[in-house]
Image 1: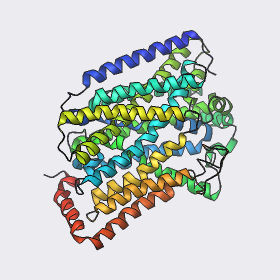
Image 2: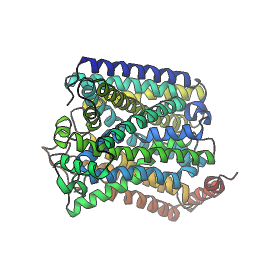
Image 3: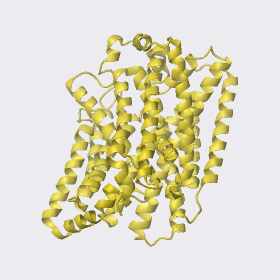
Length: 538
């Protein structure tokens, strides 16, 4: 399907160059002073609720959401619809349960929230470790996908050297965005990205509906035929299977997405940039509305790809359907080489490219901030680091995190690394979510419980995912020719999420019995800040 000539590729290259130049300029102009931590981590709390809401939505909607979810809808129908709804519900849950308490408790990072009642090096180190374990897999997935995706968009032969070059290019740009832009610079990039994404997606969705005379039933019936699955397209099972274990796996995956997607550190970090509790509520309202609208557009685009492109062509280009939205933009034009097709394809390709860049920049900033603020400034220097020193460390850790992510992405560029997305969300649901909810709402939560939930939840998710059938033992696994798995599911959340909550509870109860003084101190610190935490009272 990607048979455009040099004219279209030239238009795409010009658009890419313009977007990169413009966004880099905005990043540099909005970047913080070298000795101003508040500006670097929160952007002076200067974003309006609308801007902050768009930035939260931009961080939340990654390239995986745009490409993978659309592909799953195009190939698996019902399973993809449920995934899109779960993605929107996760942010709704964050809005109603955690957003305001997080803003009231936080300062710069997740470590600040957790250290509020349980100060100490162990808390900071654990927070940094879990932040990295949840962020690095996502970064590797985004960068690894960038290689294949950019070779497809630009019509470059799909060879290892070309993919590696694309990965290094995207990785270099993400390091510059994170190191120079800080919170306010990356927020501007996220706002540009979400506006472009909504505009191009809405255009494609309108063209899909117009192609079928605005009849939802006609679109659905054409999608059923194009999928080749018949009635099964509207039933659960095309993605994971229909056995009892597969149905449990499907339910566990949706629960994991709902609990974990919005709890990832690069998402919660955005909440600290709201100036007060009313501002964070309004910001989340804008973010939820934006994400919900986009998920509706994704459903239309995924269904349209199944109807107009067909699963046979989609899987031929990519077995997981990640290029389906680009192929749909080609199918909606007036034919290869026409002005309409060239403009639509270039617009969608440019939007996907800026989505890739902004997604990895936000994740890199979150990881670098935790390393600089939690690990260096508090765990190593015990709060005695100067702002200028901490900012210098944050800039260099951005380079370090980006370099490691690029190196890992190039090593696994031939693998099917989609499982790393599931791993990152599982860690968010199994480690971050229990630690945050207990810390914010349970007076009896202790340091032992915190470490148990963070380390125990993350380790459980990691072990189960390594030995799951998503990694080995099935034709679609990362290692299809090996079989060392004993966990019968593709997502660990059904086991690891309860394990994370149980570990936090048991750890806290154990500390209450063994060290009453330590647990009473944690309780006292919680009660001192409870009114401000839950009601923003001074």
